Image (cartoon, rainbow, N blue to C red):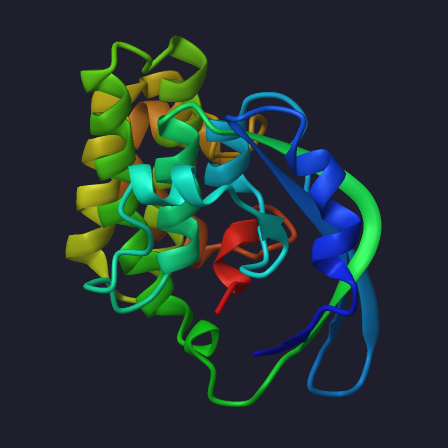
Length: 231
């Protein structure tokens, strides 16, 4: 992706000074490959860990304090993708709070062949960074029930998507991790009236096989996690 940020730092600096543990996130315009323009805004109200886990945070949107980035050693360059999702999760786990600045200060232009075009690769990386973030919180005694639920829900949803992409071993790992964290969170990744009853009877793998064999008018598609579209 290509980004442009005219006057972004000047506009965001007042918000970033509000707390030594806060990061301000601006809105942005996203131009896809067909030229369509959409305005995006980060949904970061509430718990920052859950926001970093579930929301799409464009890499250039936040204005971080250098001390916060240094406290988590910045980007993890060993990761093949999802470095920005990992960074924001680790920052949130360290107590950094995200605040939205409701101004459009950034334009993102999608490019063909970007890292985000390999959807399966992004899903596989989620397993690594989500479990690592959960362990960070556990070590800080801050893995609350709500956070357990959110991690389990996201891992279970990723497991469903991986299973449908024939990545069954990885899907099983995600489901096991989700069940370990919070079984209610795992169940929440399934439709209440359709696939959730099957999940109770059959477990996730057989449920996916049944869902795949029946029309989507009965079992809707699994929604794609919002945060996989980052480069």
